[in-house]
Image 1 (tube, helix red, strand yellow):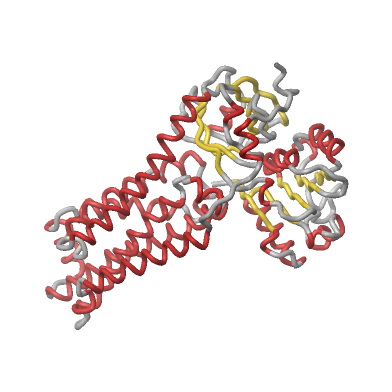
Image 2: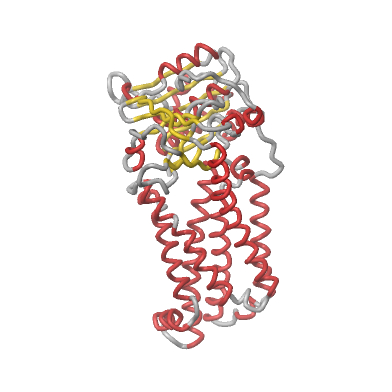
Amino acid sequence: MNLVEGTTRVGPAMRRATAGRSWSIGANDLLALVAVNVVLIGAMWLRHGGLAQVGSLGGVATAAGQLTALFGTFAALLELVLLSRTPWLDHTVGSDRLVGWHRWVGFAAVWLVGAHLVLTTIGWAATEGRGALEEFISLLMDQPYVLMATVGLLMFVAVGFTSMRWVRDRLSYETWYGLHIYAYLAIALAFVHEITLGSDLADDPVALGFWVGLYVVTFGLLIWYRVLTPIRVSARHRLRVASVVHEAPDVVSIYLTGRDLYDLPVRAGQFFHVRFLRHSGWWRPHPFSISAAPNGEYLRMTIKDLGDDTHRMMTMPVGTPVFIEGPYGAFTAAMVTRPRVVMLAGGIGVTPLRAILEDLPPGPGRTTLLYREGDASEVIFGRELAEIAARTGADVRILAGHRGTPRMPIDPLSPEQLRMLVPDIIAADVLVCGSRSFTECVLHSLDRLGVSSGQIHAERFGY
């Protein structure tokens, strides 16, 4: 079989995926569930006499330290749940939105747990008539598992620090991913401290059961969806690298074949976490969107050389076994509810949009794709996009050239230029995919044009 020219057939699982998904639980339900748990945590603290100690400066600080510990721990567990890749979360909230929630909940957890340490130290020091530093050393040396919890906090702070945008932009994906693994260990270390010293847990089996249940659910979801399910899926489909095709000087498409791909319920626009099991970074998964609509014969992932692991992928040997997690994401044609669709791609962000373009209903004037690239030599899928446009009636425009040059004297994605290129954009569903800076620039232009946020579906590439 010629993988580049493969035929398209649709099996039973692919028909189920293409039909879209109907979920009874949505983002608002998740927020309601979080609110219920927050209320329960606060109510249990009150039932245990939390307000009774508020009679002095030390008591106020100690009470505040207890609350920040409880809510910080809950935020840390919620942070893990948000990226557990639980299917209903992924498909109702969307991966891009989940990543945003995960990031802010993570920052909240770091601040709350850090405040717990400071407030508890101040409260106990005031109560016992000691200095704060003396009390802190005493807690580390004399209280069981406080040293362990403090090490966990330092790990958590490191994870939060490297999640700050100006730090993250200076780290490779591989370094960032390695550091983030410590979040799991940090939360596990804190658990022993919580159940042994937590005043809400020590003498209340109901509260203890509640918190143990939260930990069991959180790590149960992680183990089931991030470990066991990928093992099962990878063992069944046995994916291997079948072909590596160079699309541009620093971009390749890797074709994967395997068993029973018709039964892999993946949609155009979704992505997998991929491990290629023949190089030193095999243990680090990388997120890659499929760049061609599923056809039951192969999966295609198009990868840009960004250094480190992705550089080695440019020359991936044929036959390399592949371990996958997924498919993930709600950035698919199922988002489209309007007859008019506009797609804006930046650089390698064209990969999921190129796949979605195949999956949209054909029709002249229905779909417009604006593909922005800094240099014409870096444009990929030019021939394929032209063929899809001829077959479906889509309007595909490649906007290549560095801004400020004779070829591209002005920003083609400014509000004025977007209105000129797509006069009816305000009535369309708009799909945006690219780097964080590209996506933010486009979202700003769309906002200036008055496009409703409910019409905009964005997927940011990056970590």
